[in-house]
Each structure stands twice: as C-alpha cells, then as structure tokens.
Amino acid sequence: MDREAIRRAREVELFGLALRLATPEDLIVYKLARWEPIDEQDVRAVLESQRGSLDWTYIEAAVRDLAQEAELPELLARWSRLKEEIDG
Image 1 (cartoon, rainbow, N blue to C red):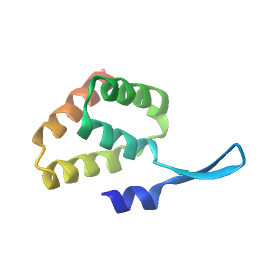
Image 2 (image 1 turned 180 degrees about the vertical axis):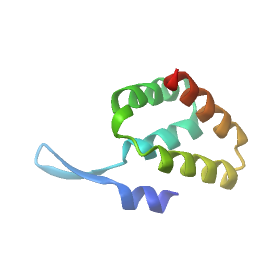
Image 3 (image 1 turned 45 degrees about the vertical axis):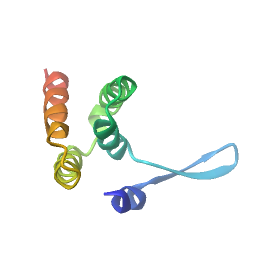
Image 4 (image 1 turned 120 degrees about the vertical axis):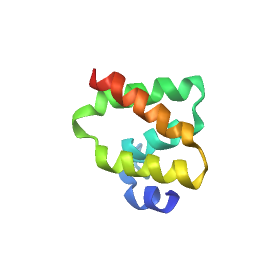
C-alpha cells in the first residue's frame, strides 16, 4: 500500500517548493489504521469536504487490503461504520 500511496501522491507547490502529498483517499486509509481521536476527526473532515470527489472503490480496496496485510479486522469495521454514518 505504501508504494501505491507514493505513486498516487499529488504534487503541489507551497511557498515555492514542490511537495508531494498523499491523496485524500490514502490519508483516510492511513488514519483508519492509526485511529487516535484526532484521526477520527480528520477522517470525518476529509469525508465531508471531499465527498463528491473521492474514489470510493479505491478506498474500499485499500482498506480491505490493509486490514488483511496488517491483520487489523477492526479497520473494516471502522470504515463500514463511518461510511454508513456519512451515507445517512
């Protein structure tokens, strides 16, 4: 997943410097894995602000893959709960 996140990173310019930043989708997946209180707030904020432009298929696959690779089944539960809350 790390290689894929690096490959997908977006280049932005900030103060004259070219930076590569993780996509919102990859940020969501990493935050779901870490899951401190601030991470939940961050995921909710990204989901709300980027809802119309997120690649939901990518997020689903990345969450599933990371949950399996890292042996973190709770990752799937977190994602399902948040997605359900956002979808209403």
